[in-house]
Image (cartoon, rainbow, N blue to C red; front, top):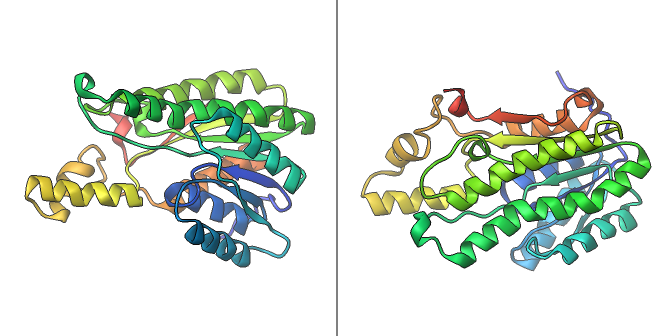
Length: 267
């Protein structure tokens, strides 16, 4: 049974949306009639091809734009939000998805990697939200979805920066939800387990080589060891939760950290 989320005509910004989870989120929104500003790094020609294809596949009148804001620079993030409001005439939805990872023991963790992970995974959420909220408050309605992680709720070794940032995203989500509860705005976090993104696929290959075991063994015994169902989270499963949260169906949900992790955080 199809669901009409009644989002047609709305406008969104999705950070980190030139690949992986963000791209899937953006595509899901455009299929529902939402115009979207994409953001992320990558080959310019490839990004343009993806932007054009997404727009061509969307219902008539839906626009798909691109802004190359660096998520470590607050001024560029502010410009991206202003660009969306100017070009699309409104901003109804913000999906904070941009993120990076680095794995190392705390006492060996490079300072620049720590700063970059905190900047992109956490501080960018603050900057984008700060500049989106006045637009949403003026409209009397808004939806903010922060892509956190199971690592926003539990920890793993050698991922201190990522775990710290994602815990911060969950806390920031709750605080913003309380501040905006009377403004028609909801703020929620989605906390996925492992998703088979291009980044994770590279990790699988690297782990197989380093450990001298098969890719299948890496997936079963290493990557998905923490997920009781031993199954990757699918893009569509994340997009479905996001569409629910940004629609009126999810209007009573705010300040939540919603796990989609195959049981990882149930223990």
